[in-house]
Image 1: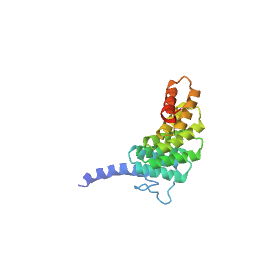
Image 2: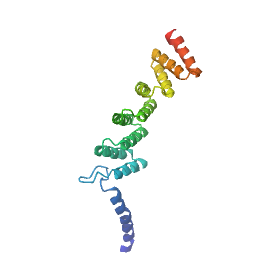
Image 3: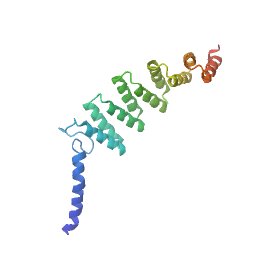
Image 4: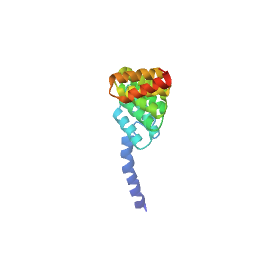
Length: 194
């Protein structure tokens, strides 16, 4: 009779013990830190957060990234990956807060601002998108794609004089682009009556 129970117990020990040592050293099963655990092992925490995210346990992954940020608040990789998870689960507030933190760390960070534009566009927050696109245009005033988006946002917010100004600047940058002339004419005829 004893032989029937030995194999399952042995199998359980072979599976559980290595996993416990690999994944359970710093955390309890609910992803809270165990007092006195070695939290300086950022590689372990990153591996854990990424694994949790891949398994679809986004809340635990977010908590793990937040733990990394408690240890190293200026860790850009953790902020980027946290923002990506927040965006995937439609947590608008957390994704924007993460991108703002990245911008605070590096005020000239164009990529984080571009991600914020996509976040605001996805969640249809055009007023916020307008602010960030305007900041991006200030950083890179010759980016015609951004200028065109700024023109479109000005139109959506009925800021026609500003839209006309941007379209005039686009014509200076790309005089061969006929669409700018047509749009500028429409703005003048329909809204500015010139």
